[in-house]
Length: 218
Image 1 (cartoon, rainbow, N blue to C red):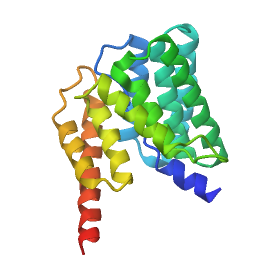
Image 2 (cartoon, rainbow, N blue to C red; image 1 turned 45 degrees about the horizontal axis):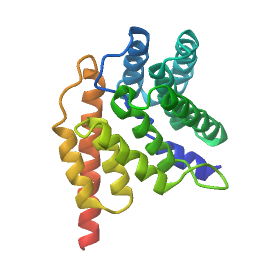
Image 3 (tube, rainbow, N blue to C red; image 1 turned 45 degrees about the vertical axis):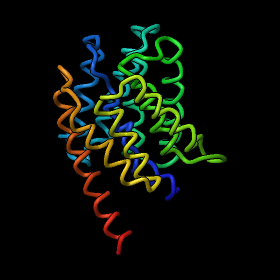
């Protein structure tokens, strides 16, 4: 149980604005803005209940547009974020549902939200425990994150999450290159809140890499 809690405490899906640079439907955009507020402005102790409520709203948006990919992706993002703050076995079940939602969205429109499906799947495959506990798979994570970069080579999220994966694999120099490239990503109109939060994430990750590199060189 402690292992699962630690794993899901590291999830970002989530944690991911995995979201896109393209214009989203109004109801989906409302989910995205609420997600950014919870992640980057709300006190940590309040986030679990907030994500629980947002997950209900995201499911409602999906039900209203069952054949649209964007709502499915954002319900997955919300569930993954909920998993992060909740921890335990409930987090694993939410991660599975998030994966299934992303796979369903991929069947409808694989490149929706500028490759966010691949970014989100890659992050899940990296962070979720592997068999027999979960479905985690580092090789599949790398493949999905690299696919996200093919779709959106200059995106802030696609570069950030690939860099995070590389850092976790000990590829510090390469990770730094992708993080620096993420900082040059063009702003996403209507996503200023998520962009600001993601840039703070990038700065924190660069600091972690610098610290790890100093220790490795001692």
